[in-house]
Image (cartoon, rainbow, N blue to C red; front, side, top):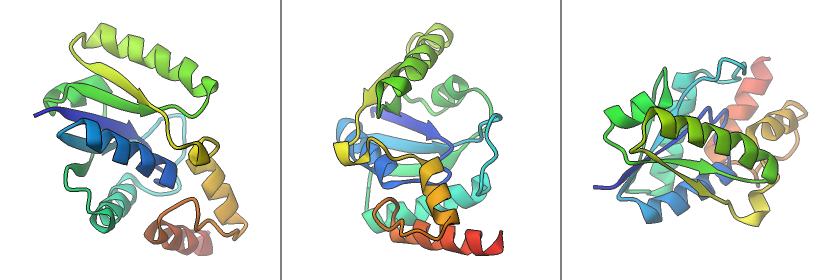
Length: 162
């Protein structure tokens, strides 16, 4: 079974992320969305909340070969522990490429058998990221075209409590 890991903070998951998930799910037998924390970011949602949101969204999408999990630590350790052969990363712009290319080379050095697969989202999502969505939500803007309805609701609830 060919398994891929799609890691990220997903704070929150967007339609752009889901576009990458759909694309990856056609290439691999199994895709695991692996939610983690970035020590350089302060997430709006806890890792448990993000994992729960993604699980709910996956149920709605009926992605049979996609699961959600969370992890701490080094990505390549997680990938190898899961028996995966690939890391999936989305690329929106050339600025993404520079960072992702560097990380792929480091991961290759640490785990030579793990490959990194870069996928481009549909062009309608090339400008979209979680930071933009959170900022728009903080101003009570309409974000329905950027995130699934369940995530939109969770963002509204979170913003009301801040």
